[in-house]
Image 1 (cartoon, rainbow, N blue to C red):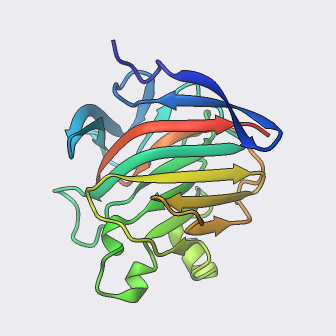
Image 2: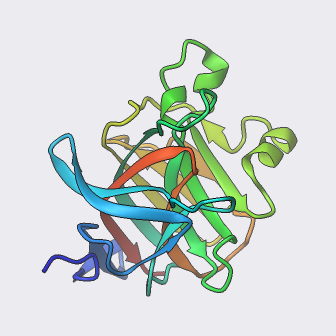
Image 3: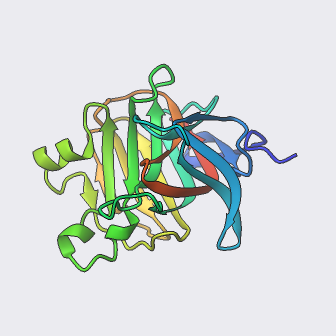
Length: 225
């Protein structure tokens, strides 16, 4: 039986001389997920199978996450394929917010670091809006609006995206620094040198805003160093 807990352990190198453990979750099942204000099911999008995650039927308020139970992440690399777009119930101002939360506090899932995408911003007919295509946040103390107000342009950037279509992202984390790569880019689209929670350890979560129709597949993360 397929399950996202049937992961593959292999040996790899994060950097020369730095051995790492690589864990792979195909996300072809809801088993092993801790669903927080969301529901999930296996579906196909564009001929590829993955998890569709949306807000729970009884959602009222709060964060929306699907945590990978048993995951432990401090430093390393996270890779995943995802697709996001505004859900049918979303306000027209919503952008289809989708990403990955990392170093999630297992005792308080509202406390985490996160990179996310705003797919519909990427091809907006407005350059300022395009510049808000990617975002770093650190919940609960540093939501996007605080970071934008206190440090305009520092924690978000432009990248080309298509709403509702699969794209790959990679997040590299080391100490208090992290970088986001999108697609096949060899250079990061967003660099953060001051992760707001400092050096911490936690779980990995599939992140979305409650207004978003989100899809995820092929999660892979390497830990070490």
